[in-house]
Image (cartoon, rainbow, N blue to C red; front, side, top):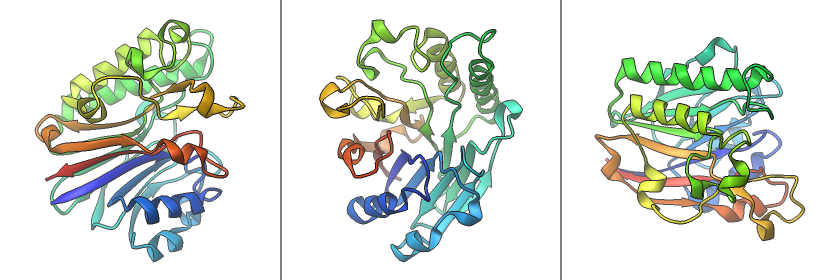
Length: 262
């Protein structure tokens, strides 16, 4: 079984439903994981996606912020949703395909603007969230699993436009990178995107604040696709759909893709 998976922080699934529909029509992913849906589950416009051949959806939602959803044209059943760090936020959902592959969809807290737990409670919450992810996967020892989402950390030097300039900026600080690495190691996860594209600068997010995001190209790779080591070799054809960042009324994130032969 071969299937293509995409992950996209959509920054309001209701506001950008037509962009989601465009992605589904033009790219035809078998599974699309969305973050920052900003909608109660019952108000997600599922009829639009169903009409395009995506009858399966599992989701956790909140009014106005957070929220995760998985759309699929392959049969999928929900197998879990965790509130890591006990924040009361809709930031995780997991589904399982008929071939036994479990897909985890995450929206890790952004962490605010100051990279200091004592001065910024949101930064501490982000670190606690990653620590509980680490502990969960250490205990679960996942197999035949894929983890995707807006993890809000660009771990490598070439995942940001300027490594030295961003070392003290939330999303690229050493402590965040260490916490993300610990979460990855605990589940024996492999970064599929970088396994497929091992060299060169690669971004999935460009700030709305930039008057010309494309020319300035001050991006960060905040959106990730991982797989457990037992199936990592089956992942290929990774790419970032950069043009989607330039669609009318865009999210500040671009979709990230990978295909799996399982």
